[in-house]
Length: 208
Image 1 (cartoon, one colour):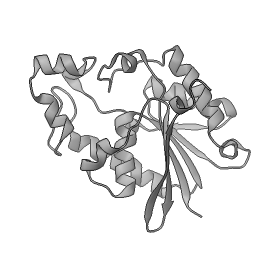
Image 2 (cartoon, one colour):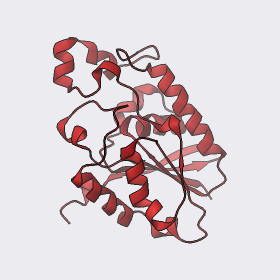
Image 3 (cartoon, helix red, strand yellow):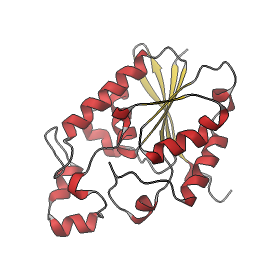
């Protein structure tokens, strides 16, 4: 049987809703985000939370991911590990800005983010190479886990990068995954690699 991994992006924050770049900024979920993660808990397979299921849960230390993990798994009695390598990329001087504001301050700078190299570094922030190295460490820890299922609570950039790392894809595939707030990327891991077995968002059910 494959190991099933659920890569889960936190619910919405006020910064997400306004289109701001948020990486190291530690914001809580907004009311809509809290509703999203409660709905997410209902949509995930109940067997993940059954006594004796042995599901491994791990989360970014940032508040929005911790709140999501608690609403989905912690409230059902599952222990949640915290892994600092799951934190979102640090956008440095871009933190809190919109794409339009960044373009005004640094014309053309966003093009480097759309087609990044390992040396791409956000002003006063983190380099993409360093970000990818810590995501690779998380990948290795997931692969080394004996649990048959894993819930990984993180951020949009981390979920994209970790998906690519587990699927053996390069960074050119980063933007092929549309990871909205309260999204789930489901991967099945085999000895020979990984298969993308699901990608969905709570937004798909909003309004039901």
